[in-house]
Length: 310
Image 1 (cartoon, rainbow, N blue to C red):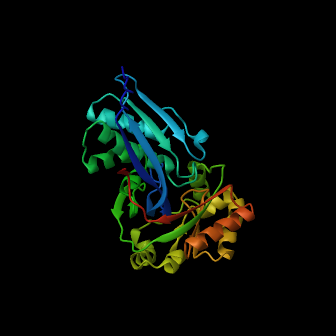
Image 2 (image 1 turned 90 degrees about the vertical axis):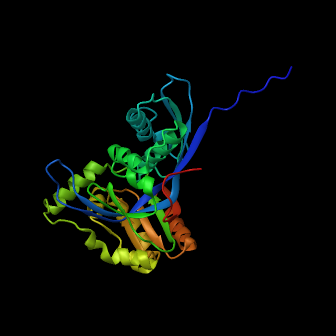
Image 3 (image 1 turned 180 degrees about the vertical axis):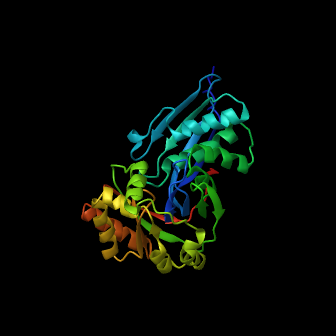
């Protein structure tokens, strides 16, 4: 008698992108303790993949992780993917029973929103697995409740973020941009960077507006990497460099290597260098490695699509 192997449990695999902040402008802290932001996001081809698998009723949520720096990723309810599954289940009134496997492709704690990409991918994957078929706007609302960068991981491509970065307006971008990334193993806590920003700017009271990035948006529309390099901007960069002076050398090496522009991504500690070509990005990354100016180096391109099932 032939014994057939049990059929595999149904599963859904979703890919979501990491991001770079091409510009990050930070307004004065408001009454609830947050800084209003104007940022220009670009999704890149360094991605997270989340596989959501059906589990028996009452099994709850489980998380497993593979990939670079997987040992740094929590496997409990502090993980954004876990919280995304819980939020969706609560919203649609179903039990949060799912096995989540995260395949890491975005540097951990590098300011590139890998955890946010996991959350966005989990929302899409669980929505498909559970057959809840939520409108994309509902998923975006759930995403905004999980973190300021999660809605952009859903949307992808290029967008202007306002509010806390979660209010998105898609932006036109032509062509492909090549990036080299210098990543440090030791993260840079975002609250500490904002505190140092406030100290350095003495509580500046200047409002920030999307119009501040007119030159950058023109460069994106024209697909002009040289103009884009000149327009890269980050109000938090001085604070990040003050807290981590070693990053200044990483920035300088990329500039000497002919990068079209160099910027600390978000609150750091990743440094992004815009290159002329894929080969140029590889050369910048190789120089960082030779000069011991990064713990790991990555090359990527943008823009990339948002969270989507594979």
